[in-house]
Amino acid sequence: MTAAHHQHPIVETPRRLSLRWQDEDDTARFAARLAAQPGLANAFIALHGDLGAGKTTLVRHLLRALGVAGRIKSPTYAVVEPHQAPGLFIWHFDFYRFHDPREWEDAGFRDIFASPGLKLAEWPDNAGSLAPPADIALYIEAEDDLARHVTLQAHTPLGSAILQGLDTP
Image (cartoon, rainbow, N blue to C red; front, side):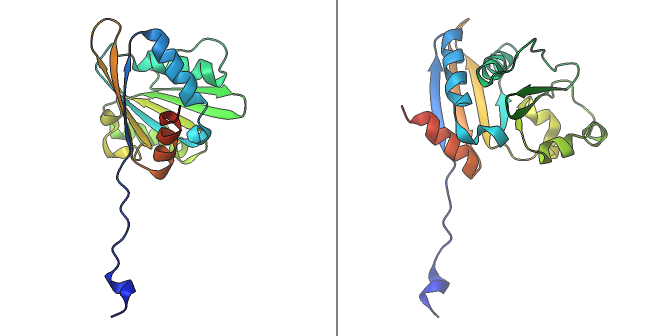
């Protein structure tokens, strides 16, 4: 046997970043840093956290930082809200009320996730295995009325590159 037969594949461990936001201003500053990451334009970010943790607040700050103008509605009842920023399509999903996997196909979500653009999904677990793997899973935990503990976990090379950029001062 040659040496090539004894090589083990390289396994990249998911990258992780932990943060603490003291208040909404910290959320806005983080959103601006995230918006500046080059790979974000085609990323899928899954947002996890209890009701009131700040998922929608983060998305609003991120959309503003990306240049989205006008009213930014929560997609709680519509399930998805499309947005457009200069040179960028953005899809904001909220699967909180999502219960029927047939909705996924009927609404064309498979096509949306296969198309270019940034996808942000609140309550992604409610979509089950229908949603593709997220590039980044972002977990927000409320510590009190203002402070949040935030953990970002990269699950793809794109997610790792974005987190590496966020981790660099």
